Image 1 (cartoon, rainbow, N blue to C red):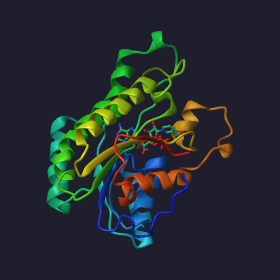
Image 2: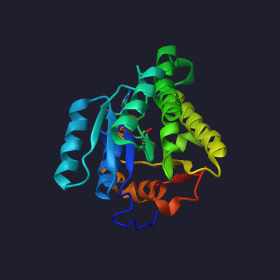
Image 3: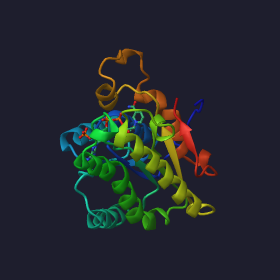
Image 4: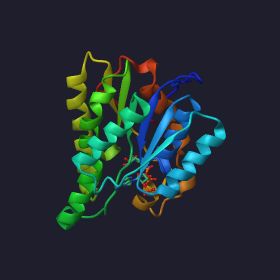
Length: 244
Ligand code: NDP
């Protein structure tokens, strides 16, 4: 996407990014902070979140916050408590990026184990549902809030051996569409981004034999992540955009 974001595009906004310790989530959190946002870094590996925190502090950007959470085990009550903490501590939430994701094990449909099914659906679908549900009342208080879901090419057209990951990404697109239809005309909007092939740990796991140097880097996707989070996309709701 050709989009040049103003340097203060996200000034005054508080934005939660899940899976902010690595890959696309890390770059998104740092990019939002560079554009003026106070970012809440959510993830399961505290050391990685702390490293991102330090990087943002060193930039002189608004002080971030860390929420350690493993989406695999989190319950509805955890998300309610998190919403209370965010509202109590920051008084607002203007953006939510559902970025954390689990690839699971790729392979034949008939070999998808029930445990693997549950784990991937929990992290990629149920966690997004429960988190969105808990945070909507806070987001609705913002004059202009944006929710971004993370889809995938195999969430629009599946392929052999992409198993529960692909199925979970179809569910993500469906969740975004359902929510966006209900939010139409309100001050909260919901959209999806399909990052496309991007140099990260997850991509390396899915395509161990490819030359990662040929892939786009997370930073190349940021115009789309900035566009959908900022005021320039205030009228965009229910869309699924490609970042590449
Ligand atoms: P990475 O594996 O590099 O990063 C994923 C992040 O999610 C990590 O910070 C990871 O934490 C976190 N995470 C994973 N599981 C959990 C969990 N149970 N609880 C909390 N946090 C968790 O992946 P990408 O950056 O590549 O992927 C980001 C998103 O983009 C995903 O939704 C993915 O499906 C999607 N995507 C990526 C593509 C690509 O080519 N890279 C293409 C299409 C879609 P930790 O570091 O601690 O493991």
